Image (tube, rainbow, N blue to C red):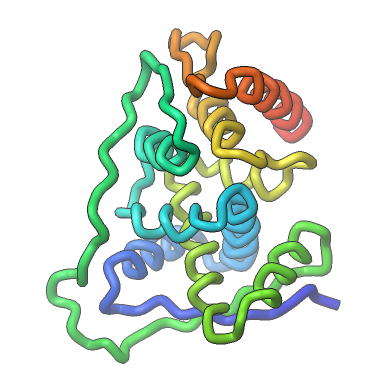
Length: 218
């Protein structure tokens, strides 16, 4: 029995929705169901780190999430400043307005998310069921678009987040994971350190867990 079946909409007059639909359209039809599930689970991991994170990543998404943007966002949420010699943190843009030339507010595409009965999917279903029906559609959209954004950063990132035995539980741990995926580590070939000024031990521990999970999965 499936863990849940949920619908959400992407609107033709919303720039973020248009970009998210473009990301989904680049995935072959037979793989879209699994792609949506992976995105939703990855988005729920972000939500558990900080419930503001999926919505902020969604607002930030401009078709291609960049590592520096993610670092800036995580630093802002955690109140920590990152020492690094690699890709610099990027200024976060203002909230985006309506896409030019899009005026038909009634045009929208409906998508269905089918969650199988497994632990990862049950966590997403539980999160959605705990949310009021009035806000559930907004939350699901944010979870999925945040997962899409992570996919544009690196396709391995949402897959890893959705299958890790021990997902990251803090902004510092997520930054460490993104750094591992991007090849930017405290002792990597790029010579880059991404270490919060506060909580260095937590980050080092997070990187150790990341390496172990990545070795198991890849």
